[in-house]
Length: 227
Length: 268
Image (cartoon, rainbow over all chains, first blue to last red; front, side, top):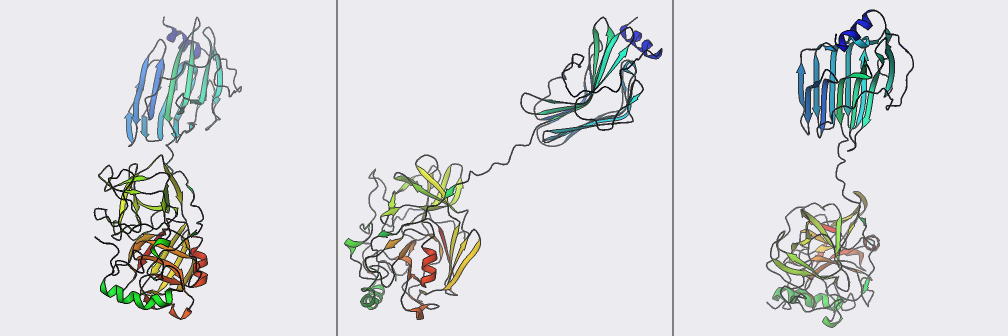
């Protein structure tokens, strides 16, 4: 039996013993999911990706350095995660991703809609009608809100909501949901849902302010001019 | 070409005011002796340090100098001062046509920037023909500053308006060039400030970067047009000068604060 089947069964038999209500703002928890794939230059967004025993490259992906690029995917259904419509959009200084009807059964995670938006280096996430192991989530939680949960026989997992990371180049990556699903034996499956990356728009070039021209001082002298 | 020559009509015109102006400015048609001219130089183009191109001064005539664009705006107020003689080109990266000296008429050279192309700056220049301009490279050896002032002369209304940062400082009735010796229209700039030895008719003379179009020379000078005062207020509002703009004392006081290189727009 695969680890996923075991995990699903664990949830089905009600073993999601959650340590709900405990939230943290520190993004670098021991149980934090693996980092998201390195985003392409400029603005980018993806709807869903998974790393671990089940690997799913980011889908769909929009990337742009200037004009708006949009991509959509009707449905992505894996054993570990099921997502309805996935829409992504990227433009200069802007990225957005939204995913409808999300299910991660092993984590007891369900959401009617999930979205992440990055604009000019600032990010925000929304989760609508979302439940993790029976606990309802805030629509717009603070950045890096972590909800831990436990799956009997498999271990501890976590959901980081509104995960926000500042990349080395100064851009911001905001991911609506970063889920770490325990698989037992210390293994885990990571699922990232609705991620958007963007940077600040470059400041308009400003002509360096010149100093004031000096006050003139008359020179002693004559010049015959056209009086 | 002999820059010293005076056209016949100009010679006649010059004789009459000379008696009055001899009191006077040492300029503005006055008796200014050539040797006493500030920064006085020959009225032919002086050779540049390289010996290849002439200096652009109020005494020079440089035929190959590009003319101003014909624009009638004051630009963005940028003025530049070369800290060393600077070559003037006929276009960005073009042919050298002149040298911009460090000093004009004994004071620091400041010229307005009226156009840009990459690192190149198009500046107005003080030599003949009128509307002379040229391109200099930006960067080292150039002090860049900003003048908030614009001077506007309306020869039809015979007014001078001084603006600072787009707001009016004042408008005054002035005397402008007579019909046969009009104040030349176009875009020019404040070239210098001179304090003549004789304080009448004006304690301050402000030569511009333009010349009379009808007088090749005047009173021994190169026909440079200037702002200056005038003791007889009855001339204000009239077209009676040989090209200069005679202004009331209040206007002269305000103009004394206007930085060198500031754009002057003459219309009418």
